[in-house]
Each structure stands twice: as C-alpha cells, then as structure tokens.
Image (cartoon, rainbow, N blue to C red):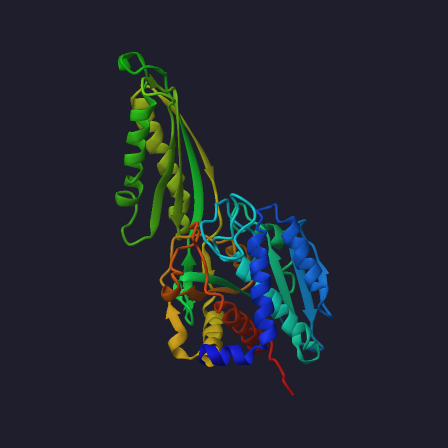
Length: 396
C-alpha cells in the first residue's frame, strides 16, 4: 500500500490530530519519573473517548482498557512517554519549550500514535473481540525503568500478547523493521572509583597517580571483550566518562570511571562484572591504589517471540506490502520493553521515520533528532491492523 493510500484509509482528521498530539508532547517534554503533566494530558484526552476504563498504576503512567462486546483474547499495546536530558538543536515550529529537555527518541510520536489507536477502537467497541489494553509507560530511559513497575502493578494480568513500536529515524519512511528473536541487548552500567594519593605533578614519586592508573584500567577493560569472551558472542564494554583532576600541576587523589556493558547471553552478562572488578583491582593494587565498583544491572535483552512476530509480519505485509519489510540486525541498545516480554509473548517493531530529502537523518538521542511525521499514520494503521488480526476483528 502506498503512503497516499494509507493516508486515505485513515480519516484526515485522525491523521491531523495525531500530528497535533505529537507536537504538543514535543513542546512540553518531561524526564523519566517526572512525567506528571504528560500523564495528566494523556489521562484527560483518553477520558474524551467513550468506553475506556482508565487507571493510574503509578503517578506518571496511564493505562486504558477497552473491553469489546464479544469474547476474545487480550492484547496490550505500549507507548513510552518520557523525554531525555538533551538541549534541542532543531528549528521546528514546535521546538521544546523546556531548556535541557527534549523528545530525542520519538516517544512523543509513540504516545500520539497510541492515543490515535485508542480513539479509533473506542469508536468501534461494539465490533471488538476481546480486550485491548493501552499502556502509556513512564521512564523507559532511566533504569530500573517504568515497565517493571507496571508489571509489578499487574497491568499485564490476563494479557495474551504485547506489541510495541519504535519510530526509527535511520530507517526510511514506509519501511517497518522486523527482528526475530534477540533484538536489543541488556544495558548494564558501572562506576569505578580509583582512590590513590594526590600531590604535586612535579613530584609524582610522592603520589599514587590515579590518572595513569585509571588510564591503564580503561585500556585493559577491552580484554573482557577481546580475550575473555568467545568472539562469536556479542558483548560491548564502553567507557563513557573519565573524571579526575582540577589543575595542570596537581595529581588528583581520586578518579571516577563510568561506562556500560551490553550483552545478550545471560552467562556472559553475569561474568562481565566479575572480570571488570578483577582487572580494575589488579591494576590498582599493583600501583598502590584502591578501587571500588558500583555495578547497576539494567534491563533484560529484548527478545521477540517468534510466533507472534510472524503474525505481525504477515499483517504488515498485508497492509504495506512485502517491500515494506526490513529485516533489521540486532543492536546493542537497550529497551525496558523486555520487562513485559518476561511475562507474556511480545514483539517490538521499528516504524521507519527517516527522510534524507528532508534532512531527517540524525540518530536517536541527538540534539537534531527529528521524524517524518507521515510515519505517524503508518504506525497507527499498523497498530490497528495488528489488533484486528490478533483479536479476530469482525467488521460485519
């Protein structure tokens, strides 16, 4: 189906409203666990739709249930609603009004698409088999994440499947990214604090130099990947912060090293901090310093259910055609959608939102991140058709 046909299938008013919602959320972003205004706006909007049962599992999340008039399965659809601590560098008419906070990952679009999907189904409740649960989740960007809180609050009780979408600026508009099985890694974080003995830079022999010790630790951490891990396995160890010192002539007594470990394999994931600690302590002790490790376990890997993904792909082919399918390689980014997949079969798909002709080419978490807004009706239509298929939609 061409883009023009997609736009014709969805009423123009729905398309325009979805874009307007997205722009509103973009102008008023809120950080993880702080999404009070966003959640209230979603709550207020949902209450204008008939037939929804609305709840607030946490202060900054919203869940709406639509129970059809006919028996059937229960499908959950999820959107994340939080923004990032980034200063926006775009020149759009709806640029963020909050300095240092930006929707630089498409969550504003995810939220708008799910609102539009809820509105469409609320108007057709009498034709609905089973139940659709619309989950507007807080704090995807900040571990431990909002998904685990909602799971613990029971939002998936009685749910048969869950489907999520992510707008992808590096995937051309009109494409839908599909991954079978492992899709996204577990993103764990670490902080190493190297404690030495500070002093004058001109007399290094009277100090325990944390800068040189820390540099050796950074270099040797790559042995975890290159020498301690099967090269056929996927593992990333990245140091992203190195903090220490206050002057050109002072050796600092402390250095702080921060970074992330990304993996899919559970055993490798468990071994990584052990190896990290062993390397850091060995180097530090060899030079008379001490080191402490603070290791924060992140989300589980996103692993798409094979059978559900096959059904979702069939729906997308029926809507957009086979050429729309892009078989995406697994990536080392993380997503707390995995918390839902620990409970029920789930699949996570990418909706292409990039457009080279419009210079929409910047990656997620970039100050110039943007989307082609014509991706929004595509995402809405895909959600609608997936729900129709999985819940045995009856149009008669």
